[in-house]
Length: 595
Image (cartoon, rainbow, N blue to C red; front, side, top):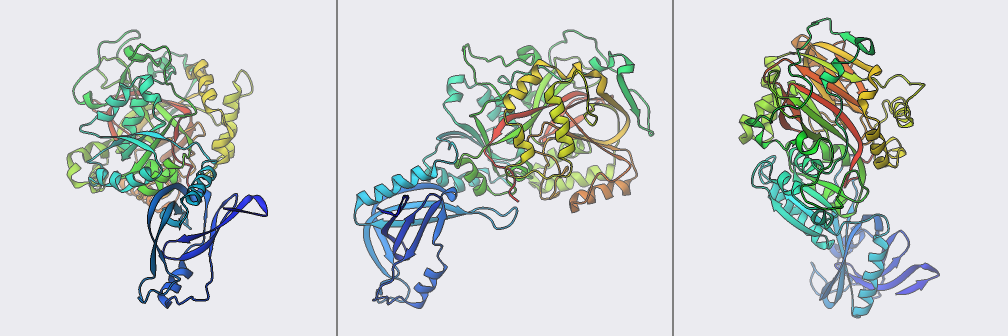
């Protein structure tokens, strides 16, 4: 390898497989090569056409691995072998540069490519490999060891096949993977929740190969005993506040108040039954404090800067992947993981206080990364459970059934108002959040989003919130009562193939807000129009029966005995819940949608 004018630029003569001898140049940004002309260039037209179409440069940001593969064959298309279809093949030492091409349009997947170079001198090949590895590891902290969970039955049942497709990429990049194929619901949750600090810290991250449901299971396994934060206020706590401190906005359709059964203090043991498979954390075990099951002085807790979670899509909707990478492609997601990409992600803490109006149980916690919805959304997920054999089409069928039934529910929703700027006795982080709300209106989240990146210390922000609980700001709570077709809270945009712009197009990955969507009871045709607008990417909130509010927390109460929530595509039976956003609680192997 020779220095060419500058210490940062090097050149060398190598052989490139299926091209021939090339002059290779290494500069600070990438690797380029140019065929060396020969007098005896007896190449066939076919070979010459191949050379013209071959790429002659790759940026280091698009290189995910470099491997020395020892002695083997290199085909020289420059030399006439007497065959119209191939050139001479020579044995030499070789190394491979594994890379990818980024899509030219928004939402296009990344495609793999590889270039095999060779030379008679092994030391020259080793020198190139060392220089290339040093050049490609500067941009991010790439993972070295990952814990992988594969859902074999997700989506169309292609979970294992999806992993087998991307596994060689991790192998080329020398990323060690410990793979578990899940055998039952809650398997990943149990495995992760039972890991000791020493065991968890031996990995750089956890990867879920499946859909949003498996990601939710992994998320809850991580946070169930490792997230230290107080619960949001319960509906009963807000009811006990003075009425003058809470503004009431009654729905014109109905003004009934749902009754709250039970009293303050300790409740009895949690109910069993259909909730046995739910990865919920009992308040007796945690009380909102990250109590580890193992007796260790030091624990892995969240948020932190080093641990990341990845998702390789193989599910039915894959809204989390589409919202965080811009495309639903396993290879693209695998490359984000290998390259060590990192983006902070808001997480919603969902506390279930009661399963039914008459039940008495210990409060339990679930975390959500994309969406939590009641009414229509809960009806769809509940109806679809009986049709899993249909694969992803079960959601279309269940959605049609739920739409035709057109059920509405009496409920009360109380949320924390953040539209108005407070001028006194408000923490600086709350003021900053309100400024974000004004500035982020109609601004779509993207890679290197200024709104999400502006608050750099998300971990410290979460700690500040824990010191000043949300329920102390009772003067800014607003209350809605009436009949609702649905109540939904989007943490991210929730883009998917059925709603290309998502439920909330302007939602951000880490701005510290939930998007509360209240769909009041309305005639069938109007609700259909609302759903069509979601499908077409038009404004779904431009209706008098739709309320859209940005908030940091809300509570929900229903008197219905079978109240069902859809939490990241998983069922949660609850008639009383409190939800709060935890800004930047986890880090994801992603960079945001590229535009």
